[in-house]
Length: 233
Image (tube, rainbow, N blue to C red):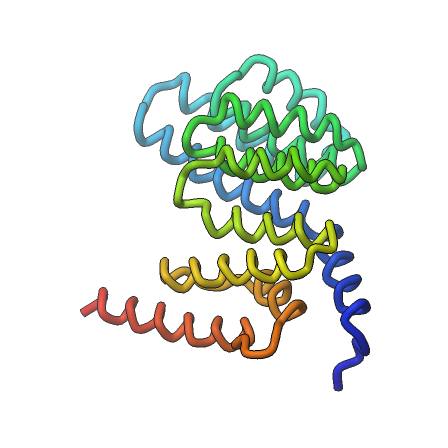
C-alpha cells in the first residue's frame, strides 16, 4: 500500500532524503576516484615522489572517513602544499565534511579548489559538488552557471539530474520532470545503468503517458547484460 497519500508528501520525502544523503554519495565518489588516481599515477610515473603523494593522500582520505576531527588539520596542510590532483581529491573530502556540518562557505571553497587544480579527471566532479553546495545555499542561478561550465559530455547525465534537483528545490516541477527525463534518456542512449535515486526522483514527478523509471531501469539492465554477453563471446 502506498503510505504517501499526496504529491506534496512525496515531494517532501524526496527532498528530505536527498538533503540527508547527497554528502555520503559524494564521499563515495571521491574515495573511488582517489583510489583510481593513486593507482594510475603510480603506474604512470613509477617514481618515489608520485608514489609518496598518492600514498599520503590515500592515508589521509581513510583517516578523514574514520575520524575527521583528528585528521582535518593534517588534510588542510597537505592541501595547502599540493595544488594538484592529490590536494584536489582531499579538498573534495573536506568539502563533504564541511557541508555535512553546515559550513557551506568552507565547503564551497574546497570544492572550488578542487575544480581549479584537479585537472580533467577531478575538476568536472568538483564542479558538480560546487553546484550542489550552491543549491543547498539556495543560490540557484550560481548553481546553474556551475553546471553550464562543465563541458565534458561524460557528465551530461549528472548535469541533467542535478539541474532537475535545482528546479525541484525551486518548485518548478515541470522543469524538474523534464530534466530528470532527459537524464533517463541519456542513460539509455549511453547504455548506463539508471541509478535508484534517479528512478525515485523521476517517478515522484511522473506524468500521464510516462513509462515509470523503475521499469525503464529494468529494461536497461537487460540491455547492459546482453551487451556484456556479446563482449564475452
